Amino acid sequence: MCLYFDITDLLKHARKNGTVSGIQRVQIRVLQHLAAQTQPQEILCAYHIGRFRRVRICRAQDLFIDKTYDAKQMLVRLGLENQNTAFTTQELYDDLANYKNKSLKRALRKVKLLILGKLRPDCARSQMGLGPLSEQNNSQLKTIETWPHKKIQKNDHVVMIGTNWNISAVETLAKKHFRRGGKVSQVIYDLIPYRYPEFCIESLAKKFSTFLDRSPSFVSQYICISEATRIDLQKYLTETGNDKPTISWPLAHEFEGYGRNEISSQSSDSPIFKKISKPFVLCVGTIEVRKNGAMLLAVWQQLQKELGDKTPQLVFAGKYGWKILPFQERLRSDPALQRRVTVVDRVKDDDLAELYKQCLFSVFPSLVEGWGLPVGEAAWFGKFSIVSSSSSIPEVCGNLVDYIEPNNIDEWVQAIKRTVLADQCRQQREKIICRSPLRLWKDVAADLKQILDN
Image (cartoon, rainbow, N blue to C red; front, side):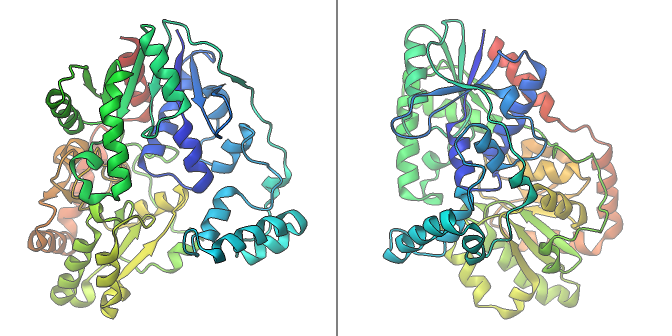
């Protein structure tokens, strides 16, 4: 039996982003470990990029060989990115993000950079504010073996492990396989666009709801990343008259590539640390309305009144998402708050690990989650956290962290103030965290394999 994993959305994300968010991190870690635990032909990746191309297949063992994520290397290995281009697709998108979408200026900028990239690569990179091409670009990466999809055997298993909310060629393949009696599993990360459309842009909420409605036509079973997500999905399926099996599949605490309870070397020369004052409290995740960052800013305003100079720096580590006007307006309107808040965008894993190691503690005030990776990652580095009591979040670390109702500003202020001032209590909680058993990504992968085999 072969397991076919749809990685189309992972590759599309890699074309526009040099760093990963939660869902992409899950896919990469799980596929890395599945490939390491099985025979080369057992774990295969299916993807469809480009309107007229067929679904292509590759071995996960060939693709997921790097310990750290490198979007360009992954795309080059698949022949989807030219290694010798002046800039990556992601670097181009980053530059164009400074221009209004679909504007003439944006279109002209794109044409100019593409032409300049062909004729004078270094000049193009300079205009984009990028450094010279690295030595790594000069060493040749080999493309891996890929082949067009021909036929999936009846006893094979198709796994939709990403955000396959758009109808794609891989979904069509999965539907045909299901109709022939084959197994198709769909991983569900959350039902947020369906249950809380106010936290999303309208187009995403509609797209996701349409996906949920059609998914029973090609899914044998749903695999949910938390019990809270499974309960939400089960309720939806019952309401819509579907009786598909739903299974919980909890994620990991491990921040892979970094040792458990690893201590900071204090020697990071990354430019992001030049912007950060110590001590600091860390909040990891996309800055969007659902993550409740505006509430956290209000908490920091109150802390400044109560703690004065003892107020720690607040560091947000994550890219900007949607519906962030309240966050921006609160920060923009308060110069004193600006001095206490730092936002670091598109953080690479090395820097994120160092932020976890150096922070005083972490906070995670999200209104709703499907899991809550940053809560577990902070624990991996032995750090205490104050987190939201909402949805799946209590499943991540149990009694190792403190819980606050996400919109209770007064309780957040008091909890953070206590943790800042009571060093001994915080350090005692850290000792408990450091000794507690935490879940590894290899365990998550092994559990998924068992679910799929059964």
